[in-house]
Image 1 (cartoon, rainbow, N blue to C red):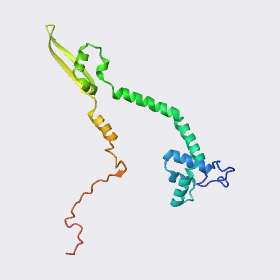
Image 2 (cartoon, rainbow, N blue to C red):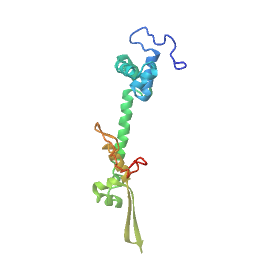
Image 3 (cartoon, helix red, strand yellow):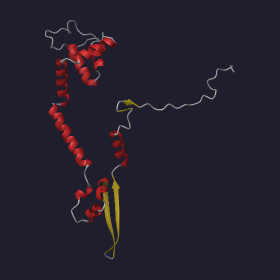
Image 4 (tube, rainbow, N blue to C red):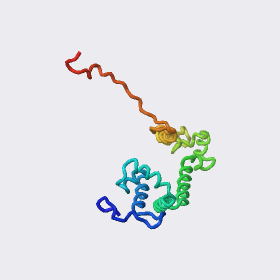
Length: 195
């Protein structure tokens, strides 16, 4: 590897065209860390300036053996494509279970909780928890108290806003700039002694 910021003599040489030099491997590892092709090339080949690094990056990362090596790095880090897909499916299944759950599914048919929730229709999916109490006087129900808590409205709106990309500076390829605010100088910028 590099010593004092320089590669040892002869380290860039390879015997076959598709064999990776230590610099090539270093560039691939740097790219896998920060995801910037030009920066990875500049770190591996410090003698290249901006335009040269950009041109080399464009050629370098199109090579088949480079992409194969990048895939092997990704497999070491994340596992095989099949493992990543399986893990993603498990995460989505769990999110679907939580996201589309309905509290009325957890009470037996005919119970007072089930009857209360059935009357709410699909709105029951917004309920996080609830409690029904009967006030008894002389063994007779005088009043029924129902307390319930809804899932976080703020969190729901935040996730919906992220889905709609409301919190980003770029929406569908169009850069959204913040409006400039005009503040009059009221003579503050007039040079002293001049009228």
